[in-house]
Length: 434
Image (cartoon, rainbow, N blue to C red; front, side, top):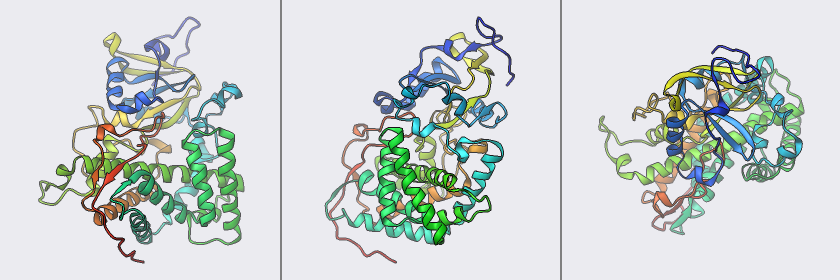
């Protein structure tokens, strides 16, 4: 990617992202209905880079090409994760109008930092997550999931999203974080407010109050939990930094597993015959195989990995369908550049139709800000254990509606159902093994 300086009348040696066509809003209910079809339309009309809106008036570029995304996400010299230069261009009154601003504003954490500060935050968070013992975590998932099933198994009907996927993921994550039940309840309210689009100040204050109290508790009486390991890490995080690292973990470690569980259950229940048939090896297709496929075809975070060009930046050798040629596109300085993991996973160069044990997807991002390995392991373990426990206890589970009737939560980043209604034969609660 070679950089040139734009002239006053346009750009030299390329076209502006603004000139490729009208911006596409990717936050609307209409877009959420069938995003893969919309990504395909983008690919046919715009090519690798698409002018979009993350909210009304919030302009960004969406990257839907694998090679282009890898180049940008691994080019910290020219693309920063720090949004402060962009924030300075946005009036405060306008920021307050954007529901998603809480998720993209600058914070002293690894997602929104570069260089030494990024490394410091990431090392502390990675070490705190790496200290999780997988066997006790697996037991916690099974116990939590079993208890959740027992709350609705006598009914014969349930909404798995609100009664199972969400509560199990939330309870497991807040437990390994080191929360008391009271603190967990407060974090639940804050997390719901974040993804429901409550105003930025309210959401930030809710999280800040709860996580600052958790930090004080762990400084006074550390235990074997993520918050205590963060407090005791050699990075010596202050209280403000602790709050932001914990916030990053909470927001990602609840939303991502919850959506991964729900989206995988949707795949399993809507294509039951395929996933109960024997594979070529003679073994039944597993939950793990369904998770692999979901990470490719319906990842829990569809678009994220936000970066900002430090200066006007020319992206070379991209296909421009409208011009029927390979060319270059200028990205303006400081405007958000968002990677579409879902679009890239569905592109011809990535999606071969073979998903089992295939880790070539972009569901966890790429480059220095990609999801760290301990977090990936934790998300997968939570998802797999939660799904297995449900299907073991309620083997005759069926969708209550046709998959096309399910609604998806609008928003530019997540891929999240609004509900997952199911039916099953009524059964008695089963013992929880402790």
